[in-house]
Image (cartoon, rainbow, N blue to C red; front, top):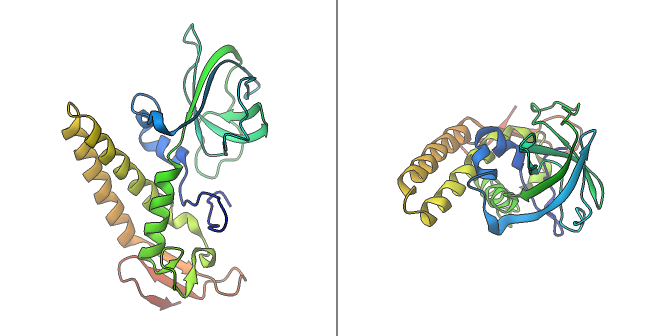
Length: 231
């Protein structure tokens, strides 16, 4: 499953990924990225057949995951953009792709290049907060400790992807508004705009609960009414 729904152990939990943010707000990974949430960066990397090789990093130790976003640039500007991390091949190599459509599995090739600088910033922490908010809203563990059902019982978590990404982006712009007086008004407007999208998407959401792990919905929980509805 592309969306992490396990909440045991140390794994970050989310219903959306960085690439979902990239589809709507690429500037959050370029000009407006959070330096404090940069998990890896370096130079002298090479790109061959969409495989990014870097000798100055351990991608595994840095907790790099598929669905994260890497910014790449070389000196002549022939490479200067944001790409999707599709897989982790080894400690020093990841496969990247031009951003794909949801559900698209084939890599969209990136041309070969050398002497690349790279940067990976992630908003997984914000995604985890929205994950907990959504779990709480729908009365599911771990959002509420005594919930009768958990996020593990959700039949299809993809219905929460768009809600999640709107909530994440709203929170990011609210943080940016508090940091930058010059652009404060514009950032607040963006935050409010995505907050409204988040609330509307929440109202439309209908989460199916599968109690028997048989792939058949036993109940549906509406984001508008927050009560169990038998199908």
